[in-house]
Image (cartoon, rainbow, N blue to C red; front, side, top):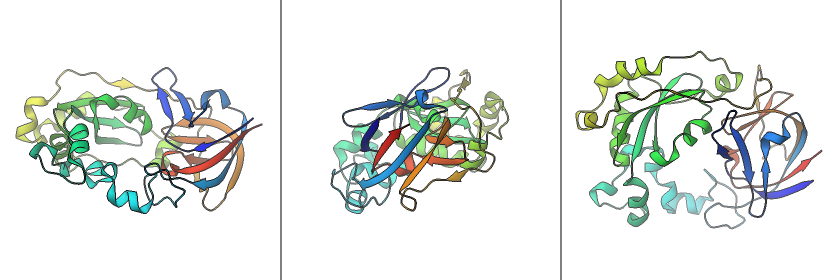
Amino acid sequence: MLYTGVLTKMQTEFLDPIQYYLVFENDFIHMNQLLNKTISITKVGEQCLSCGLSRPIFRQGFCRTCFFEKPLAGDWIMRPELSTAHLNKEDRDLVFEKKIQLQPHIVYLANSSNVKVGVTRKSQVPTRWIDQGAHEAIEIVEVPNRYLAGITEVALKEHVADKTNWRNMLKNNLKDEDLMEWRDRLKIYIPEEVKPYVLEHNKETNINFPVEHYPKKPNSLNLSKVSTYSGQLVGIKGQYLLFEDERVFNIRSNEGLVVEIALA
């Protein structure tokens, strides 16, 4: 069977284990059903996720023009402390920015390769944690806009990591942490204007991924260098497909590629 479409990040269901779906314009693949099966992935083109044109992907699934012009690629996406919609100030499109920035946001602790702090819209819990490959996470602050979440993250990352080591996450070299204890330890560093929004009694969320076995030395698959790859799928974690030969393919970092996926 052959599927053709533009890669976007896999959609998920929060079940035990997580259920993954690769969704194309007119079809989808339930990826869990492909575990222990051989699949082939071939790059056949590129298509910007914003303008839909067949242009080289620059970053985040966007062509160069859209990356520097569209609001969804504004600096405040990666750096929420730069959000200005709460001040009625426009970056690229104030209507769009108000829609995204002026809604409840969560500051959280997640344990993927290590304990890290992060920010997401409340509507993206627990999807954000799943996409990061976290096996446990906890909300620590809920604020009414993205800016307040951003300044909280900036304050806390002086005392806890804000990045995931993707290799350690995929090797599953993890230990369980008491995230409630981490929350209590970090509370003193939360900005004064945010302290009324601290969540005192939340419990950890645990996440189980569909992985048969983990790679010892994960080797990233780059379809821009190797246009066709075939391998046996042995796991899915975060937005990565894990193969028997220890190749790993990050769907998220390859958004915008047009691919053919053949099932043996």
